[in-house]
Image (cartoon, rainbow, N blue to C red; front, side, top):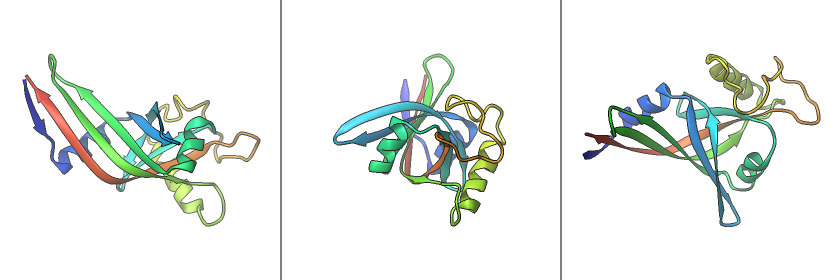
Length: 148
């Protein structure tokens, strides 16, 4: 088996072609990893979540990592790791354009709200548990590929 490094362009193509990744965040030295659906656009990964541990931890420490993989023929695989920064996109004055852009990017894909929750109402409405739209600003990307 041959392991090779992916170019930045190959990493970007893999991120754009996929929808599911593993998001890692940390708080007080404790790591936490969850599966997330995302959409890739303009050097960001856009995502949606209901409030909870993941959002609380990213608010406390915005430095995050996302891993996306593809399985190839036989034992072959490709994997990309994004080092980035959490940016919340609240639905309020000053952030409306960014939140609407996130909604637009995500809603191009069927079932984009899964596994985060039930489909949010269009447009999002305030209640006791409003959905959280966020993006991960891609600061660095690296990838590897295993070829049989």
